[in-house]
Image (cartoon, rainbow, N blue to C red):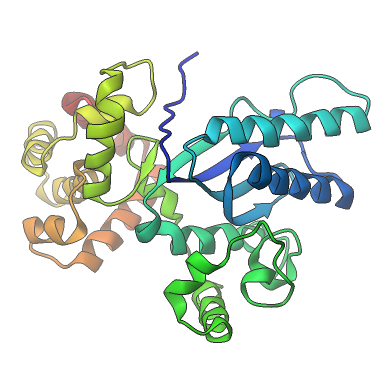
Amino acid sequence: MARPLRIEYPGAFYHVTSRGNEQKDVFKSQRDREKFLDYLASATERYGAVLHAYCLMTNHYHLLIGTPNGNLSQIMRHINGAYTTYFNVKRKRAGHLFQGRYKAILVEFDEYAMELTRYIHLNPVRAGMVALPEEYRWSSYQSYIGLSPAPDWLRLEAILAYFGNSAANAKQRYRVFVEDLLGTEYESPLKETFGTAVLGSEGFVAMIAQTQVAAKGADRAVPGLQAFVSRPEPEAILSAVSSVMGENEKLARQVGMYLCHRHSGKKLKEIGALFGVGETAIAEARRLFSRKLKEDRQLAKTVETIRNKLEI
């Protein structure tokens, strides 16, 4: 089985998820959730983990976590390992609790931290478990908006600092920021992940490619690694689109926007300039085309043909 691409260094931040084996529940009682939070606390004490946000669902969880010591693997072995032992002993079972290894996406904190905490805190709403995120007890949202005290191991200040110097005002503004998306079709920020492993700006991705990935070599057995070493320029993408799609100019333009946005690593402003439209138009075009890909199998095959041609 191919190894997940793991990028670890001191000061790295991650969005981490881990799901129950066979999609089964990993949290079946209040005590289960309390115990898991205990292991989050001990991860901060023993291994220096910095927890910025969390949400415990039924068959999976989400974390936004910082690693000053560059030791995410060690932290996650502790959290998932200790909780699995607890869960198995309590229920007199054996074997894996979680589905394979956890999924960790390296995050450029300044660019995506706010958006990721909003995504994490809205999970129970999207799942239909509650109408408002504040109604869900098992996330960090109540602490963020001041409805419950934050545990010592939960660090709110880095996110709230984006919303003002006064703690009270920052919490209110953060609440507005999160609840502004209620009732809307919200596209996950994780869809912007590059190479299945990194979420960040073009400069951040380039830095990771140069300092963290290049030394590993172009090992295609590692998911996401090839994407770092073969980012196509927009001109190459448009050439490939043209060669595959021929004279269907309108659809070719949509495909070109989508693939440039998804794979070139260029900023929205740069891609917009290439197509003669604004940044918002590029983002909206990507969203609509993503939906079209799900509905049109033939189009999805055509896009995959272009990707193969570009080796991405």
